[in-house]
Image 1: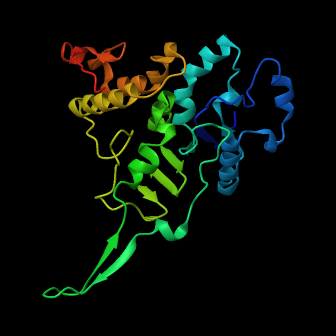
Image 2: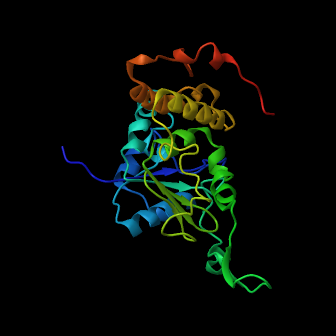
Length: 271
């Protein structure tokens, strides 16, 4: 069997009645469709794939038969592998609906840090840079995409994420976090690597893994689910990954690890 590199897409579905894979149109879509008929978020992602040289992209609404419960159950359990094994995940961060594009209002002059040369009395001349320390939070962390529960698993399991925001591109992988403002990598003071991600500076002993798990559950619990019954399924891939890391020394029980009982039953609402 031959294997091919491919990209995946994390996006917000929204409420628009966009093109989806159904039992009624599967034969038609297998023959192909015009890219112009696809939602704006999909067209944008395909454009990115073309720039990177990818021939294949996995998009949930076009790769899972939406009116087939059997296909959904089968593919939902496999999605952890789909995102884990993709070469890159494209995250349409700014689009609240798949009919919207994300990368829309980029102004190069406002992206780069602003250099300031100072000549204050009693001090040596110096050079400083003005930048938005909350840029990642504003453009990615608080984006419409990060409010979708399924995306927590998609982002966390993907080894490389390219975020399309309205202002600039953001990159996050196992080794580096960068943006157009900082193409060589974010300064440590601005970096969020290891925070709510699947890689970075976190500890891989049991205590560190459980701490990361708690942060992920906190993030996930604040997200929105269109279908409430998806609650455990949309987090199952992360649970399996943690089970592999923790080994046989711990047991996963519906969102809780046995070693953390009864402490894990103590919770409170932040709303």
